[in-house]
Length: 89
Image (cartoon, rainbow, N blue to C red; front, side):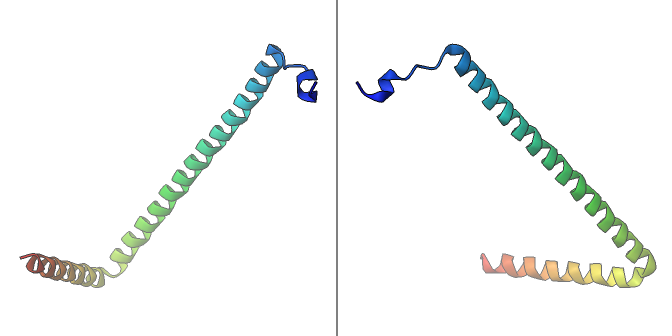
């Protein structure tokens, strides 16, 4: 007889214990992933708030320079959209 036939089949309790262990491992991994995602979202929100504060401070310190930058960005955007629109015809 082959050796694998002589081995004792696992009992139901052993299988249930193994399933429970696997479930615990998967649950821990999912919880770690959720914690990491929440931490990344929080850090991203803080970075965005810092960038917004820096932008507000720059505009308050140099309002005419900010106005010029916004005007130039608007002109470039308008020119780009006009150029793209004229190419489609």
